[in-house]
Length: 88
Image (cartoon, rainbow, N blue to C red; front, top):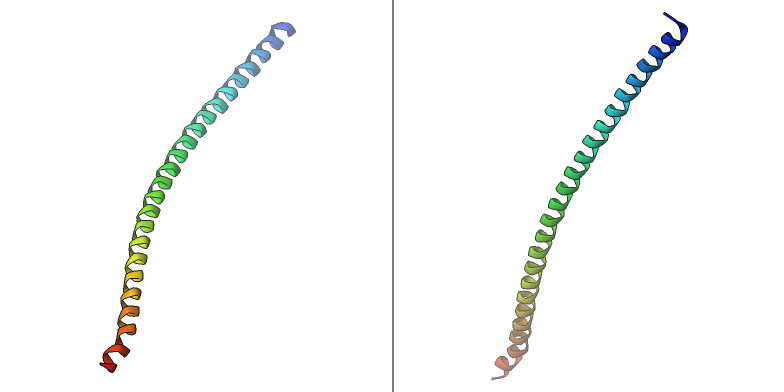
């Protein structure tokens, strides 16, 4: 075998290994991107659930606040009427 043929064979082998390595890296990148997409979708889902929980808590807080305001107003009314009852 001539030196040229040996060099050509080594070059072909090196190019084949390089091609395999590039394909491996591209496959890994594709898997990483797929994993990233899944993670983003999971985070979006969690964010949506958290927003729904926040909306429920906001509504509950508003309801409780309104009821407390009503109770405080009733207590004020009762406390302001007591002295009048004692005089009568």
